[in-house]
Image (cartoon, rainbow, N blue to C red; front, side):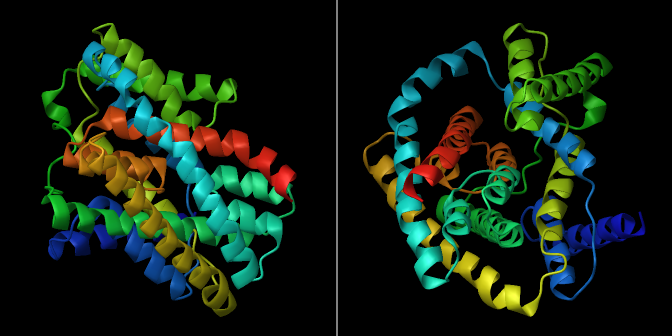
Length: 337
């Protein structure tokens, strides 16, 4: 418990420092950097998995609440870019597996699950069950999420002059208590229901589905308040930083460096696909970048909400990416081993 309290205090200092320096996304990037620096300094930190999962439900409700009949109809036109997601995953695998195996000497299983751009927890579970190195997998995927999430805000602001200071919602005091209560019910029912069904990404997708149904029925009329989304950012950022707790110099030299190199590959591939999508007129540049960037689903959802991007477009592509990786990873790992 002491470690948890200390971790939250460190993350809170990160938020305060980012606010003081007027840096972007203080509630997300502040905790990431503060916890990362503390972990690299040898501080032993601890997260709270249940609260972290609970905070992700906020994002699910936020996305689901934006689904209107018009948005739903527009999803039918997304198929050209959705078809590119499996292609991008295949290219990442064809480059990533040899990169980890030949350049860094990882075994095949660890190389394969390190290269797959799925959810951190899913890749750790699959990789460990198949005989991979769970610590290496954890550090590689944490580094992937960290680099993508940290780089994107600066790219969005530098290229599109995106306003990252926008509040992610209205103040809670302006929302009717009935709407706030409905959001809580939607979050809990969606999360627990999806988990009972064994759905991947249950904490986000379950609330998203239930919230979308409530929004389409006209019952849910607002997104969660700004305070709730800031809290979600805080816990998500803390979770990313805490994954580096206990890192050794050997892991820094090998796993962290390998992960950073792979992030360079991912950034190049993402730019190629985004440029192709934009040049073909399939999607605006900012939406294409947020949709194809292989970062964490929760973190990319936060960015889409803040910059005012087409959240439905962004989340549809990330759901498909996670779906393809989760279903295909174990199958292809056996085939190509």
